[in-house]
Length: 411
Image (cartoon, rainbow, N blue to C red; front, side):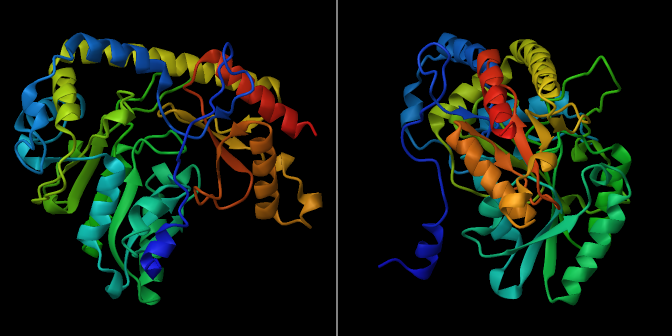
């Protein structure tokens, strides 16, 4: 017999077992997954670096220095962040704590900041990364307070009013907001928060006495458009907190999984002026990551290639979608995804006008056709019909997946 907690966790659907992935040459009937945000475009480059530098050190067989990550890796990450995030005050290695992925750090943030028996909660704008519901609340039993700020207003100073109202509405219901969490750059909208908006959010958090957690996992996956104005990434650490907020209330999450296509390393870090201690990740992963980050000449070239390939893949995805008459959000130039609008294709006549039921039906048809995407319902979209399509796959897979989507929509 499982505990009630264990029974609840057992209902969570984690990927488990062999993958049946599409390959044009070897598995043409396989599944095209546009669901997992991985930068497949850079895996060969990363693997090449690792294979060239993989001189296994026997010290990696030991527990090592403790629970915060090796000093070598924390120094390499601090230098990397200071070079690319342009912090108002240099980030020191002592402010960086590593763990086995940002997913774990999401949960740790909830555990550290919130007490479930006190009706504590973390506030998020919506739409937003769907797995936050699992990462932040599944095992912590805290509340998540979603605030509707829209696809566009979420990044302008006008969102401050919405978050303020959301905080007060939660308070009136007896919910204690302990932190505001943002994705910057945003998942799934691929947009960046402006400097002015970030200052406003910091001031709001200061006035409410809450923490700001900024998930900046896509910080260096921002690619410049040549056909329209592009947004630029501003880290919350690039803003001098003096006179705005106590710096101990500001926390940044970052890692190796997105910008460097290294999700399999399972390495994430929190940058915070609080003393955080977590379970240390693999010594082998930390050794490889340190070697990678220390070679900033290679990192610069790696990121340049990544930006070029992300842009080309997005442009191909936009062209294929436009040819099929499939709508998508055209704003944003960050991350690995497009926010599709399939509301015009929802089979409402089959669900008595229930839009969310129609979205589930359409999702099931995509799955049967061998193509998978994350849904707007998972991402707390305010209305049905939204899907997130990850475009950073090889061109053959991208073409095949959009072809399968089009066939379903043409029924």
